[in-house]
Image 1 (cartoon, rainbow, N blue to C red):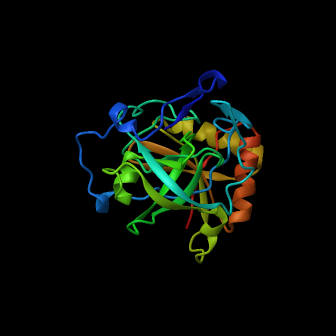
Image 2: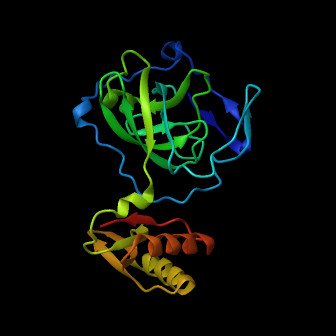
Length: 248
């Protein structure tokens, strides 16, 4: 189940136990042991997909001010072929082969560990969508995530959701420090311009990393997560896209 928000108009997509007569699994059968978790990283909570409050079928929902500390247990469902390639609530493209999920009130994007309480299998998903809008369900996982947790065939399962706090990613000892990737380009001149523009705004010197014919504009190393977080916020506040955090 998911909610699509074109031009801020909320449109409800059906979500129920009959989902699989309308939605469904692709012909590709995934091996749960071959499915990699989403990799948690710091991401700025953007406006897209986080309108609050919003209403669906007469029910009003309030997006939580922060995902940190969220834990819940309840019924999980999944979505697949019907929505594959369509837009998620924050404007990204839903890929049923990625470890993603939809939630009614968590800020998006955020990351969570989801555990199937019926068989003990777990996985980490990136939440970037809204739903499921069905009273007895708390999360809608992608086809891949449901396959990893082992409930794809049965349709639903009781799960535990535990949001991953980005600050906790700094618990391991620092090796080289944090880096921010400002962009990847096919032309060095473009990478240099982006780096120069951002460096001038935030007062940090960066560098260009070349791999084959790709030029990546980066800033770093930065010794601690708090400083890195502030720098990300400064870059976004200056009008640039949020950089990718590369942690030690």
